[in-house]
Structures are given as structure tokens and as C-alpha cells.
Length: 435
Image (cartoon, rainbow, N blue to C red; front, side, top):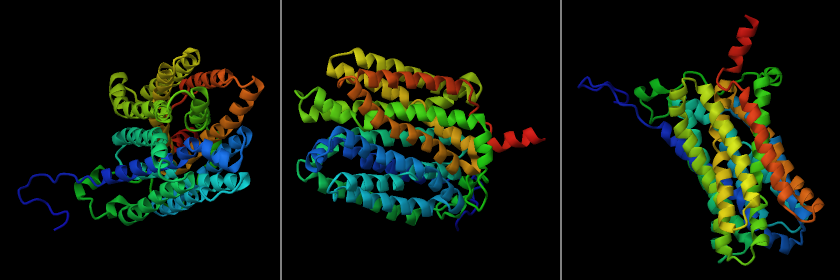
């Protein structure tokens, strides 16, 4: 019988159904980055066929980030209200369709509209994946799961240029988008069949595993979102601001880096250029994984999870800033991209701490809070392609000004974490203030 007490009297071993949630999250993270990074590698072909210049291309890139940012909060709020199962299934199908539709674009405005609709769909992915972790995972497993999640996302993006290069040996860029879009529809079908918003209702979860799961954090329900609490909280503003800085500086890796590499080192083979452009996202993934697993050990050493997150995130911002400056001054392409790999690694030392803070501060509002944080990140991401193109134009095509600004933005992120309490729930702070 299900959940029966063993006759031997040996305590029942917990099942591991919750790791199935991590598995679905990992595969979706890979899909999200394949679908958003593939256009950067296909850029020369798309720009040539649609007759786009750099200024128009910067708006194509920005249209995704703007729409992505605008729909972060609505999708996070909807996940808090009706559950991640319904939301994720719908948005994955939506953005997969518009990934395929990217290959149907016939000009500038059609491409901008398609990428904006694609961004609108993808906006709900990470807030609702955070929602699933808050619901399904014990406290001590959440940051580690976030580390694995972002490793998968970054590696999906890192290897996408190589994947696009390989696929386009056989099909056109238009057909390549159709292939990439179809992957998400398959994911949505299997996720919807397996996942449950209430883990205790899942047939694969036994009593021992139920005892490990959170009691009420992250449950869907018709509860009002405390927007006033969010807006009045200095901690929320610090969380938002540091993510704005992080996303602005990191956006180069998934937007302008492949075209920059093609133009700066045309003497290198296409395959070697694709391999080099994988460096920052590849090492960013390692940074996420390292942070996810090392942070718990650092917490034990310093005796305080908030202090551990603060040290880790501040180190990440500082490392990215210094490595970006080194990247500017190195000439050899291999060592130059190695420096950018260090910047990517350091960048993602911040990621698990940021998303872990959303789960701990937001609790049952984790989807909405993480959505709002990611929205602020998208504001930074949307600003970067346009700012980079304008800075480049004002300096006569010199990219150094772009990179120096990114290094400075990374450095500013340190000051946010110096004053951020990332573990005390917002509602607890409100109850103590009114007591």
C-alpha cells in the first residue's frame, strides 16, 4: 500500500520526487537560453537578409528585453495566484511559437514585434521556476538548486553559438528558429502531465518526503500582493538595483558579443570564434554551480546565511569589474576571452544569492518578488544594446568606452549588497515594525 509503514519498523526513506522538479527546471533553463541566444549568432545572416543596420539591430535586441521586463511581474503574480503549472505550460507554448515565428520575419518591424512577443512569453519562466522551488524544496536545498538552474541556463547559452553554427550548415536561419522553437512545445507537454502545484498531492511523494517539504511557503492562492510593502522596503530596492547593474553589464555576453567577435577577429575560423564566444557564459555556469554548493559551506564558516550571501555577491561584483578591465587591455583573443570568462564566472556568483533572497524575503510572494527583481534586471538589459551602440558610435567605433562603463556598473553592485538583509521575510519585518 502507498505510504504504508514498513513491517520491519525501519523508518521510511524519503522519495525524491522533488528532484524531478529540479530536472524540469534545468531543461527549461537550457531551452530559454537557446531560444534567446540563437539570434545573436544568427545576426549576420538575419541582418543581411532583412537589410538591417547596427542601430536597427540594437532595437531588435532591446525589444525582447523591454517586453520581457514588462511581463515579469504579471507572470510572477499569476503564478502566485493560480500556480506555476498552468502558467508555465501556457507561456512555454507561447514563446516557442514566437521563436519559430522569428524565422517568418520579413523586415525590421516584423522582427521587432516577433522578438517582443517572444520576450513577453519568456518573462514568466524564472519567476515561476523560483515558485516551484519555493513550494517543492526544503530551505537548505533552494540555493543549491538555483546554482544548478543557472549553470544549465548559462551553458545552454554558451553552447548555442556552436549549436547554431552546426544547424546552419544544413538549414537556413529561418528553419533553425523553427527547430529551436519546437523543443519548448515538447517540454510543455511533459511538464504539464507530471507537475503538481501541491507536492503533497503528487503520487510519487511519500510521507517521509512530505515531512521534508515546506508547509505553506510558495502555495498558490488568492492573496493580495503587498505592493506597498515592496515599494517601501529599502531591502527590496537594493535587491532590484543590484540586479539592474548585474543584468546591464552581463547583457554583452548574449547580445553584441558574437557580432563583436566576428568583426574584431575575422581571421579566425567561424567555429573557433563560436567556441571563444562561449567563454563568459560557460564559466558563468560554473560560477552559479560553485556558488550554489559552496554557499552553504561558507554559511557554516561565518555562522550567518545573510553574511555569507553578502560576501559571495560582493566578491562576484568585484571580480567581474576587475576582469572586465583586464579584458579591455589584453590583445590576444584567447586570453582576452579567458578574462571575459573570469568576468562571467564572477557575475554568476551573484545569481543564486539574488534568487535565494527572493525566496526568503518573499515567501508566499516569491513569484511576484522574483518577477519584480527580474523586471529591474530587464530594464538594465534593455538599456545595454542601445547604450552600447550609441557609445560605440560617439567614440568612432571604439568599444572600450562600452566595456569601461560595464566595469563601473559592476563595481556599483557591491554597495547594494553591503546593506542588504537577504534572509528576513518582508512580512516578518512588517509585523515587528507594527508590534
